[in-house]
Amino acid sequence: MVRAAILPAVGAPLEIRDIVLPEPGPGQVRVRLAAAGVCHSDLSLTNGTMRVPVPAVLGHEGAGTVVSVGEGVTHVAPGDGVVLNWAPSCGECHHCRIGEVWLCAKALTGVGAVYAHDGEGTELHPGLNVAAFAEETVVAANCVLPAPAGIPLPEAALLGCAVLTGYGAVHHSAQVRPGESVAVFGAGGVGLAALQAARIAGAGVIVAVDVSPAKEELARAAGATDFVLASETTAKQIRALTEGQGADVAVECVGRAETIRGAWDSTRRGGRTTVVGIGGKEQQVTFHALEIFHYARTLSGCVYGNCDPARDLPVIAEHVRAGRLDLGALVTDRITLGGIPAAFDAMLAGKGGRSLIVF
Image (cartoon, rainbow, N blue to C red; front, side, top):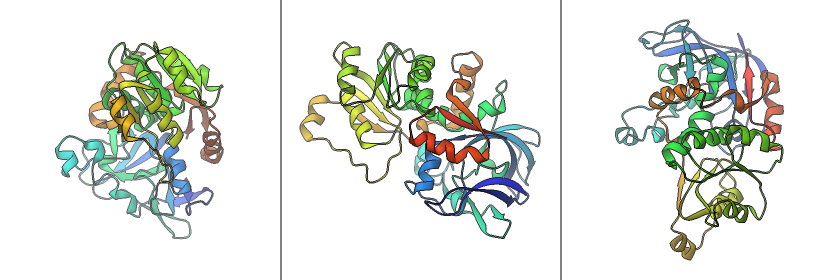
């Protein structure tokens, strides 16, 4: 029996209670969580913006220690530190074959599985494959990666989503070059990681945009050279900070129609706008044909930072060890499982960076 945060139904409050985990079967790994981050995607699962089978144990950003392994698992062993990978690639589908593993067609097939039961025998699903909002979890072997040496496991949890996504948005999707100007919309966990990544990429002007003035200190600590409070004049203010041109790159980390449109408007002619935030179907963004021609901007989506975790984790870990990327700076609250609802409320209110559940 382990404690876990269960989503009983879409729109229902989380329930913190005991669940029954089986021993790992062939090709599975049991992990004792050290920490798990509370991500906006978890909130999107609770309100139905993203859908998975319920009841489910949420949580997809985590790290911990291997407790036991099933038959055939050789890349990790009991006692090893691991980072959870919520979107493992199959290596066989079309996207995997052409190197776009972040778009793997089979990445989320595990969410439909029954991985545990509650105390009354109700079947539970692993929210986004890994069910990290629990003291322990059982996952497919391809959902764990060896934790990078020299990084404490609680902080390593952030590598599983926020950092891969923010770093990848800057380095893989937008491909920021030294000296370019970057505007990051949304200074939550992913946005703060994107700001640090822009600094690592050698960007010149780095503008953070957020609805909360309290985010300015966090944003500047992450690498922002300037801070703009989101308003109807955001694009104008960003142009004023970039010699009247607009940012070379805008990274949208919110997933709302107005911020996507604002990021587009803040980008210079010929610039790149990368959308990281996950919005609902009701979030309709409109453009007219003439502006698409005139501005010649590139608008692109970004899934999981367009990252290959097996390739990118070692690179990011070296930035951490060298002091170029500060994982602790992303965390504004360290909580228990019972603190998740309050973390969701803070997220909705635009407060803080990452909330980290520490077990």
